[in-house]
Length: 523
Image (cartoon, rainbow, N blue to C red; front, side, top):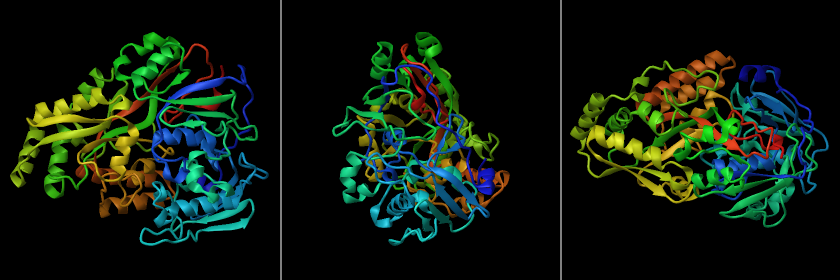
């Protein structure tokens, strides 16, 4: 798919969908979580904020249910060499305040996101554009306006999957009004997508956000309902109870307490399907006992002390699959035959042996803790993983809960957390690189453990430079074999999206990345 995009230079196109029935004024209610930060596209890299941004903004492309790119704002994306891309924007598009969606709305937003001093969480996504720098403030010289609706993007070297990336929120445009007061804009963002905020006060912090239909949106995601209210839950069990009681229309996260019953509870309204979601936990090298050779031995020992098969069967009732790599089986190029993948298999004797080797370097003391957000339904598996480690290695191990996702993520982002912590990845776009570059490349925006490997970076870069998909995936698989040695994160399992919907709603479909296609839902 990436190669076809790079060579032909355009994604599939789509006309606005016709109405499929239902009350066009009905408000759809769904679960979510309080965003970590104000809603600035380049500074949002978590699912709570991302779910909202994807509804109120339209990028150059969007992804359909299968992950295929569809032109949205883009009229065309063309290239001859996978290095310089000419992007044409559909004419007469506007943001909801009337500002034009034009070349400058992309160029200024991307430059802001890339500038070192702005410290945006998604700045890494602009790394490949000429002019990007990790060392000093530098303009993206690779962005050149041709006219009001045409601009070119020149990369430092060929990137086969660059057009595929452009549906991710880091690449969304911003209206001219955003630059008057960007901080205030983040609290009340003005977008160009299928929905918009329902006036001042639509975002009720720690409670919900109310979105209504944007009547001027004419892309392929035209809303078949009257709006969307995303409720921020502190507990997944409460969200599930609301679904059963008819107080919530769509849920994309079944609590572990209901795994054994939700399909019988909901019948044909239950969702249990594969999605591009990978779960892990990360142990920063800065923690005592986890740097150098000792750290590598301990990571391998911990990984082999986890009985993934048992945990996915008992805790998750078959809604998870033990990981064999760092990506997802639903992504083209996935392999379950990587060299070194045995480190992800439960092996009690080998785990004890490796832990003893690490103890010979520096004796272990204290408790091994895994931090997690208590509002995300993670206690069951964290306790199970901790018990598996405790029973296998004979050390103290326990979960370390934080009340909210926002609180946990803030400590992780600030590098003040002093334990291992839950991590995972819901793909931004459907490519192997997206599971590797943002998480493990040196200086990457979501590299929460500050991992750095020159060998890994080289293989990653080689794959990204390939214009042949098979050759690129071979490099990405080789890069993963480095990760299997170093274990910057401990892979656990791939997640199915487990969810459901109420009796009063129809046309519910969950996408490749586990998020419902809200615009298509009728009520």
